[in-house]
Image 1 (cartoon, chains in turn brown, blue):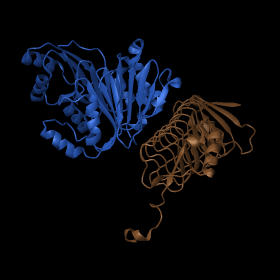
Image 2 (cartoon, one colour):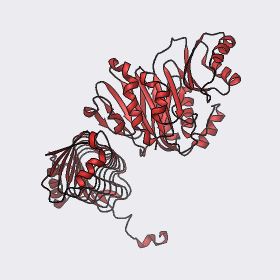
Image 3 (tube, rainbow over the protein chains, first blue to last red):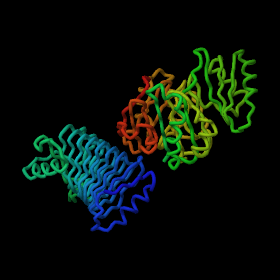
Image 4 (tube, chains in turn brown, cyan):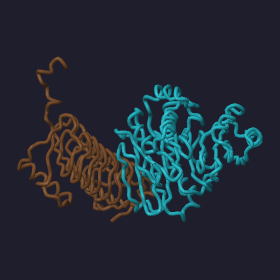
Length: 227
Length: 300
């Protein structure tokens, strides 16, 4: 195990150290101390590292992550795991807005609440939130799964494309073109896999599924005059 | 941009350290607002029959003595004056409206930046560290304090355009964001008799709150009405006589984070400002939800 103190080396010191590691490095396990809410910690990683961040982080933590497994032992600021490609980012506390924004792949787990715009424009990432999400979550979501064990705020899935949304609690309101959909066996299987990966005890049968009515983004000849 | 920060002490043993605890929080927000800085500190409450004014003048060498002497003579009242850099704290037994009218008539260069029983407001152009030291805020003792670091977007970089803006006795407002309907709202508030010193959007929000409160609304009602009447993006932090309140617009794209321990409650634009507080590592931390008025210290 290797240790890095952000107070001593700064964000650049930490990121350049992690970026310098070859993909097949044997120094896989890193612990970051004193994050103190600083931004852009552990962004742009592209090696299968295991990183523990001991404390609360600022904006964009783990952005663009590829292959690495990050655990944040604290609160995560705005845009955590934004544009993640693969790997795992696990937030042990709550998260601020826009968690997992534009994420392409990998798994983002937030044990607490996730605030507004969670999974905005998601493109293939899987997100599991143990608590609730705020308004405009999964706005323009294109692909991937958003699992919410608590409640969802207003305008869930507004202008959604093909992502799948699973909510166990109440949905304050659905956004434009987002509708409740039938839960088929393949969805229950998918949900079971995601809940297991996130160490959740909830049962897939307790959730409802939401997705796109596909009326907003498909060409309709009746609307030809509007184009 | 802009940075806003608030600290409310739950543990009275920390009161003597208020200014010292708050300093690194405000300085951490320097790169969100390097143009001007303002602080409202709640300390040294005056007697019930007295009013405390925070006054400012563009001339740092302004002779405040003539205000003291002039007011005592004109309004037959007791006054004490404490000069703090370009500001002064005036404590008087005269009626608030009479003092304001007298200042306007005889010393139009003097700006009233705050009034009440405990509030003191200091604001100037310049970096947070410079402004904080100019007003010796390190030594501030009290229950709560709020601050603002401004990156000017809607109006000029001037002391008058700096936050906090007073909104009535012991009340003040700091704002992160921008309002889009402030011109029209300013005109209608002028018709109600409200006075404006600047073209600043936050001053309009402050005048709006003042008008609502004068009309008998509670702080919570005034803030909730504001959600309907103020168009734009905002996170507001309102200092009150015994605490503070936080509210965000329905879209809530202007950042805000709250933290609480057994000893204190803090609010900031970014968590890194709060990270300086003792016990922040194990604090309860969350993002305030839009349109919900959060209050600490009993008021509202």
